[in-house]
Length: 101
Image (tube, rainbow, N blue to C red):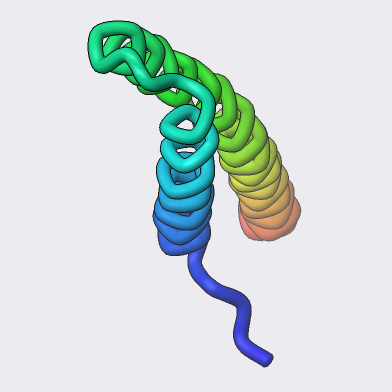
């Protein structure tokens, strides 16, 4: 089975978590709170709570993804350095006998 791309997994998770949070929390608050002003105040803080939680989740997911990218970049830099050193060594080994001729 093919794995979804990172950005699609993030978007799908955000939509699912947000939808579940909105549907169930609104039903719970509407059941217990009858005052419209208090309900508005609660829903405002509920929205800020959701924004805060998703921001933390995005930060953690992106941090993990950036760490992977940085490790891949380091491996590429090391590989390039080894390739350059190898080519320099081969070039030296070829030039040395040619100079004596």
